Image (cartoon, rainbow, N blue to C red):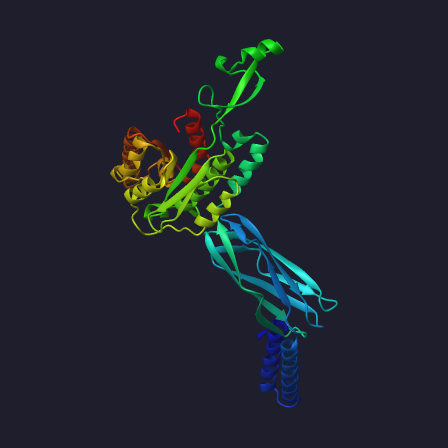
Length: 437
C-alpha cells in the first residue's frame, strides 16, 4: 500500500494543526487529537476496503512473432471483478530489449461487475531471440482515494523476435505490382541459350533482334518477341559468419542482424524463383539446413536463425568449407556473408577454392558505415587528420583484399549493412542471368 496525494495532503494539514496546537494549547490540542483519530480511522478503513476488493483480471494480446526493429502493438484487456469502481494506473513489464512506448496509462472502469477496458501500447524489439513479458503492474486507487494498492497481475508471456521481415513484405507487395525498381531491385531476364521460354509478347524498345520470333511476326504482321525467365531448380546456400567480426554495430543493429535481414529477403526471392535454399553458420554454434524448395521453407529458416547471436569466437572458414564440401553434391551458389576487414584474404582461400571446383561463390563483405561518416567530415585538428588518413589507408587495404578475392574466382560485394539486402538480391539475379550457375 502506497499513500496517495489526498492522504499526504491530509497528513500535512494534521502536522500544521499540531504545530499550531503546540503554541496555543486548549481546544486546538483537542482538535488535533480528534483529527488524528479520525484520519487514522479513515485511512485504516480505506486500506481495508482496498485490500478486500477483488483484483481485476488481465489478459495480454501480443503477436507471438515480433520483427526486429518494428513497432508491435500490445493490448492489455483488464476486466473488473469488484463491485467498487476501478481506477488504476497500468504499467506492463516487457524485457529490457523490448522498448515500451506509451506506458504508463490510466484506466477507469465503472458500471457492472465484468466490465472491461483496453490499454494499448507498442514495443520495439532491439534484440532477436526469445523475449519475456513479466506480469503487469497495476496501481489501484482505494475507494476513498487515500491509498494506491500496487499489485502484479496477468501471466508471464514469451515472444519470439525474428529478423526483420519488413523488406520481404515490401518486396512481395511491389512484386505483385511490378514495381521492384522502387526498392532498387533490377530484374534481369535472360536472353538466348540456356534460358527457359516463358511466353510470346509484342516487341518492346530495347529487345534484341535475337528475341524476335519471325514466324509469329509474319503470322500476326507485327513484331513479336520471345520472353524468357531464369532457369529454376538451382540451389543457393548461405554461409553466415556469426563470429566476433559480426558484433560491430551500425545504428541499433549489429552486422549479424543486418546479415540475417538480407538472408531472409534473398531466401524469399530465391524460393519464389523455384530455387532450393539452405544455410550453414560458422564462427560459433554451427547450424545446418539442407537446401529445400517451397515458399513455406522460409518459416523453417526463420525459426533456425531467429535466436542466433554473434559470438566472441574467431570464425574458421576452412572448417565451414570442408563441411560444405561433404554435404553439397549439387552445383550451388554459395553466399558467404562476413566482414573481411583488413584480413589479407588467406583465411578465405579454402572457401574460394570452391569457386574453382564445382560451385559459384558470392562474398558479401560488410563495411562499417562510420568510415564514410569520418571521410565526410573536414579534419579540424592534427588528430582529425590522422584519423582521416587511417581510414583512407584501411579502405585501400580492404579494396586490395577484395580485388585478390575477385581474381581468385569469386564474385565480391563490399557494401554498408543497410544496403546489403537489395544489393544481395541484385547480385543473385545477375548471377542467375549470366548463366554461370
